[in-house]
Length: 223
Image: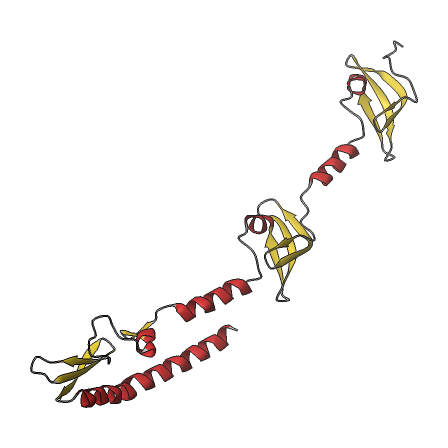
């Protein structure tokens, strides 16, 4: 039999050559044993060129080494505990523990892009913070405006809802639920201010108390 230039016992990569096999379709082949224990038949030209150096286990090892492993890495509030499954249509799923103690399942893309940084507790905290600074209208009434007691830039009397009349007297009004109520005209500013404050007690105070009560109940249901 014509020799291929290779010898039994020769080592190429992880392969040890056992014996040369009869030609097939004009090509030479060798029976080989891999370091991993598997036996395989390899074309002689592939052995000589270095194209084939194992039964295929080396390629699989390289693939595993290159495989992304997020275990132990931290993303925002999340610590990756380990890989759960690999789904091509959704990407790898990871089990994570949030700083708040919750365990959640996250996708690779969400973690690496920064879209997923907690179990959801961070988003809920931000929502509550935004609720505190947001402007809320209930039945046409701005809750923050009537609760703050701040004067508008157009006010010249120093008291909300109290205005100087052309005849020198004073007029008191109050706005509530989209309407403006005239509280009367007065000669003295003190009387106009008193009328305004009395109206605030009757309209604003019950309204704000009811709003706070509803907000408290709403926050309990979302906890």
